[in-house]
Length: 170
Image (cartoon, rainbow, N blue to C red; front, side, top):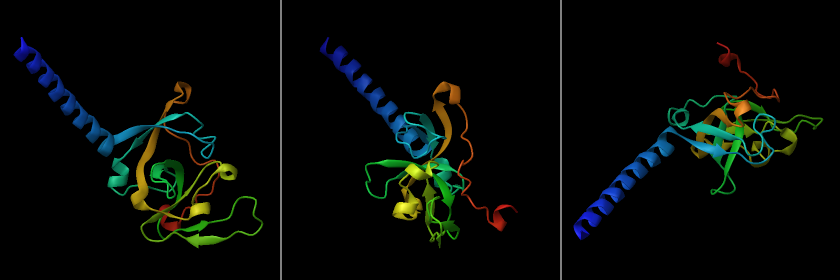
């Protein structure tokens, strides 16, 4: 009796560990589900939307201008931010807010990206904290899953602040 219970318990623990390892690898290397909060990406992503963030683009260095990404916050490593990539290394980006009369520009340093929220008036982004290292990127948002009536790929930036370089159109 004791051997039977012990055998079943160890079998259950073994399967749990195996499935836990598979789930960990899937979430770490393939992608994850993210519940977004805050107004910075409105109207593209609103509070409590659920998105899927895939990790392969980051691993293969395939992040592009216009992609929405999940990254570690440069201020708090326990928090993630959801922002749109406006500039890649070497790109000239506008650092001013939309209401500024005089526009200021800077270049994105090597190994960094420039991030901005779609809701420019209510977003803490690279305009506040500067470009972020590529290593802080966790994944690229490829699908909106919830609410169901919005299911699908995400729209282009409503701010039109992404400047295509001549080499981007070739």
